[in-house]
Image 1 (cartoon, rainbow, N blue to C red):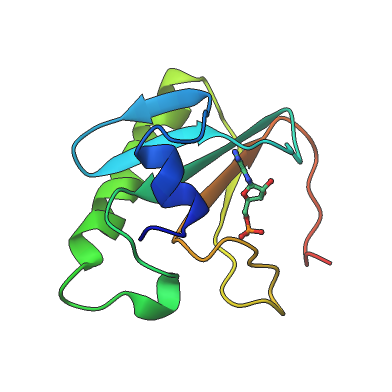
Image 2: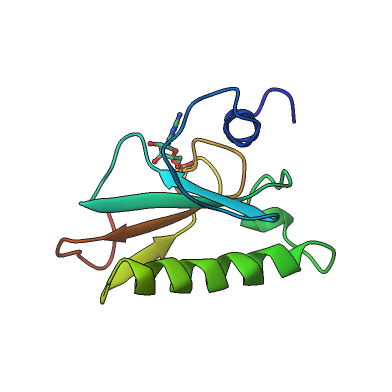
Length: 112
Ligand code: AMP
């Protein structure tokens, strides 16, 4: 999508700190980290949010979770949180599906 920030990051039009990349997804450091470890994993194909996941595109979501598990193992993360915000009230600010991976500090529940 031409006006999507994360599509521009995937295309290399906006710089990012790459953590991982394959044919289906891209992972990069969050520009405003909320924990000592904070990266985002996104599908290369534009999907606006979890609310747009269905039988036609859910395979990439399963793949992303495999990648998250792999990256967490590689980085030695024993405890971490995976978050996806859906809609403005929940805190979504970029409307391209992304999973935050946060680790390295105590976290509270429920979230604020
Ligand atoms: P959300 O608010 O859940 O939609 O998450 C969007 C995330 O994207 C936020 O944590 C931002 O800090 C992050 N973000 C915004 N612009 C960039 C960028 N250019 N590079 C890396 N992360 C970004």
